[in-house]
Length: 141
Image (tube, rainbow, N blue to C red; front, side, top):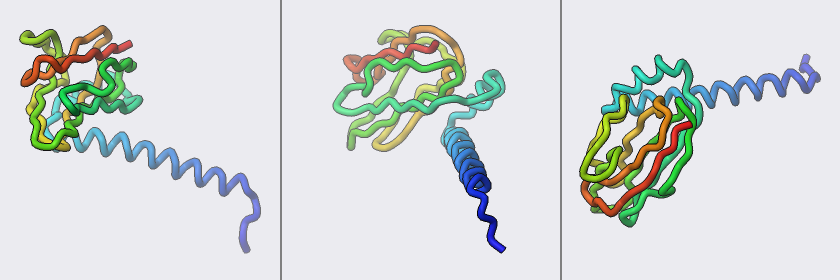
């Protein structure tokens, strides 16, 4: 006999949605771990949770968006969308860099990403180490 209570159907869909969202966050963290972002484990333990995902696209020698406001424990990803152009996102003013626990500088080829968890509050200048005219700002609240 089929259950005709619509709330049971709604509850099942909500459960599936929550599991899907948890799977997305888990996939993002695992992807980063498999591709060199081992420090993400440290930040995940410190934060106790992971909040919103933010993407900074690098194309035409620019960070898009050039300024981003995130909350503590959000995930930030740099993604290179320029074919045949290499980028190396770095924190701090060029040519100086700052150490930000959980963020490791690396050269990004086309479609490659660098992900970290924003666990320290502050205003952080971002530049491309290979093309110093490419600049941006990350604000962690």
